[in-house]
Image (cartoon, rainbow, N blue to C red; front, top):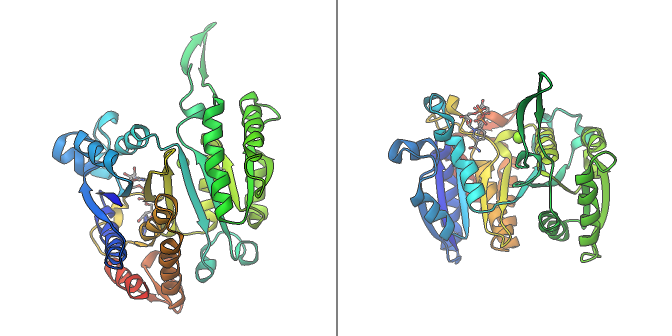
Length: 353
Ligand code: NAI
Ligand code: MG
C-alpha cells in the first residue's frame, strides 16, 4: 500500500501529522503501508517555484493513494493565477484522472446541535454524494465572452459523452452496493439534452446492478428535498456542476467543516483523499485545528482504494467514541464537552483505535 502524503500549507502539516499517526497504527497492526512525503501548493512554490512540481507528480503517479492536507494562504494570494497553490490541486486531479468525487455528509449524533436544520430533520443523517469531477460545463468547449451584434455574450457548453457517464455511474452503483442499495441520480432532463443522455445512460448501467434501487430527481427538486427531508437520500450521483452545488449544500447540513472527509477516484480506484476544508490560515500553527476530517479521509482510503471495510470502520468507530466521550476541538465544542488541541485529539483517536 503505497501512500503519498502531501501536507500542504496552513493547518495542513498539523492535521496530516495526526492522520499519519493513524496510518502508523494500521501499519503496526499488520498492514503493509509505505509512506512517502511530497510538496504541493504554497510550500512547493516556495521550494521549486511551482504548485505541482514534477517530483510531486512522479510520487503521486506511483502511489496507490494520496493523502492531502490543504493548500493556500494569504502569502500566496499575490501570485499570478497559474502559480497559485490552488492550481496545484486542479493539476493533480487532472493529471491523475480523478473523475469521481465522493463526499459523505454524516451528522454525528453528538454534534446534532451544529446543524443549521432542526435536530429531528437531520438526526442520523448519513448520505454520500458522488460528483463527476472532470467533465460537464466546467470543461466544455466552446466557451467564452465575446461581442455579437454590438453586445457582449457569455457562453459555456454542457457536454458529457456516454463513457464519462458510464464510469461515474459504476462508481455510484458500487458505492450504493456497499451501503444501503439505494441510488438517486440527479439531472435536469426536462430542459437539458445533455442530462437527458445522463439519465438514459445511468438507467442502462443500472441493469448491471439489480440489487440497487435507482430513482431519478430533477436538480431543483433535489436542492429542495435536501433541506426538507435529507434523510430520504442514501447515495446521490450527479454531474460536475450540480454536484458542486449540492455537495456544498449537503455538507453544511452537518454544520462542521472540520469533520468532513472526501475522496477523488480514478477508474482503478486509485484515489486522492482530503478534508473538504481549506488551509485555515487564521488558526494555523496554534494546535487548535480539528484533525478528524483528515483522519476520516484515511477511513475512506481504506474503504475505496484498498477495499478494507473493516479498517475503515475501525477508524470511524474510534472517531465516534471520541465524540461520545465528550472530547472536542474548538470548532465543534458545545456545553459540557472538553476542548482538546490538535495533537491531543490525535491522542484520543489513537487510544480508541
Ligand atoms: P477554510 O476552509 O480554510 O477555512 C474556513 C473557516 O473554517 C476558517 O475560519 C477556519 O479556521 C475554519 N476551519 C477550516 N478547517 C478547520 C479545521 N480543520 N478545524 C477547525 N477550523 C477549521 O477556507 P478559507 O478560509 O476560505 O480558505 C483559506 C485558504 O484555503 C485559502 O487560501 C483557500 O484558497 C484555501 N482552500 C484550500 C482548499 C483545499 O486545499 N482543498 C479548499 C478550500 C480553500
Ligand atoms: Mg464548490
